[in-house]
Length: 351
Ligand SMILES: NC(=O)c1ccc[n+]([C@@H]2O[C@H](COP(=O)([O-])OP(=O)(O)OC[C@H]3O[C@@H](n4cnc5c(N)ncnc54)[C@H](O)[C@@H]3O)[C@@H](O)[C@H]2O)c1
Image (cartoon, rainbow, N blue to C red; front, side):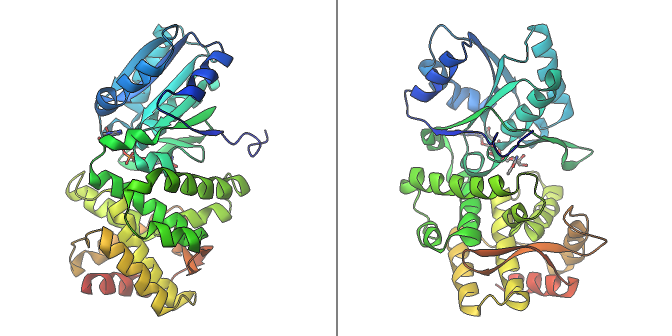
C-alpha cells in the first residue's frame, strides 16, 4: 500500500459546509455515524446537522467528554452500535470532536470489519493542527496513553475554524503550543507570527501548521526518522504530563506540559546542538508570555526522569529526543545524558 499517496486530503471548510456536502453526495452516503462527546454534541453537532443535507440520516453516538473515554470499553460500545445498525465498510464514521474523539473514532473505524470509511471533523485547536493530521489512532490501555493503536488515514479531514469559537482560552492555548512547536522545528517566518498570541488570525495560522505537519508526515509516514522532529518538547513534556496526571487528571493540559518541555529541551539544545543562548531566551520569553510556569518541586525530578525512561523513542535505556539547532531546523534523535536533563529541569524551576 502506498501510504504517501493515501495521505488524507484536508479541506478548509466554510460555515455552509460546501465541500462536506459535495463529498457526501459524491459517495452517495445516505446515512452517517457521527461520534461526539457531551460537549461536541452540544456545541458542534447542531452546526453540522443544520448544514448537512436533510436527505442524509445522522446516527449519533455519544461518549462522555474527557480522556477516560479513549478506551477499549468505549471502542467496544462503538463496535456494538455499528453491528446493531448493520453498518458496512462503506458506511462512514464521522469523528466530530477533539483529539480524544479523533483518536478513539479513528481506532474503532480502522478495526471495524478490517477498516470502514471514516472522516475527521476536528473541533479543538489541538485536534485541527495536530491530532487529526498524520494517521495515528489509538486508545489508552492499562493506564498507558495510546498503548493500543493503528496507523490509519481518514478518508478526509474537514476543518471548520468556527468550531474553535466555543473553546475556552486555556484550550486555545493548548493547541497553540503545538503551533509554536511547528514553527520552531520548521519555519522561522511562521515563528515570527505565532510567537505572538493573537487568536484573531487563527484561520491563517491553522493552515500554516497543517501544511507543516503534512509535509513532515508525507516524507516519513511511519515515523522512522524525520517525523520524530514533531516530538520536540515532548520527551520532557510527556514526562511532566504523566507526573501531573497522577496528581489530578486536568491539573496540566498537554500543551502546557509541552510548553515547559520546549523550554527545557531548547536549553538542552544550547548544550548539545549549538542553539545560541540568545535564541533560547527568545523562545523562553515567548513561551512564558503565553503559558504559566508549571509548579513542581526539585524532589519530583527523579520521578519525572523515571517517566522519561519509559519513552518509546529510547534505545537501550538511552534517552533520545528531538532538538532544534536554530529556529526552523531540527534533529530527529539526539541522545541526551540524564545529568543534562536534570539540569534543564533545575533551570526551569529557577525560572
Ligand atoms: N493522533 C495524534 O496524532 C494525536 C496528536 C496529539 C494529541 N492526540 C490526542 O488528542 C487528545 C487531546 O486532544 P484535545 O485536547 O482536543 O482533547 P479533547 O478531545 O478531550 O477535548 C478537550 C475538551 O474540549 C471539549 N471540546 C471539544 N471541542 C469543543 C468545542 N468546539 N467547543 C467547546 N468544547 C469543545 C471536549 O469535550 C473536551 O472537554 C489526547 O488523547 C491525545 O493523546 C493525538
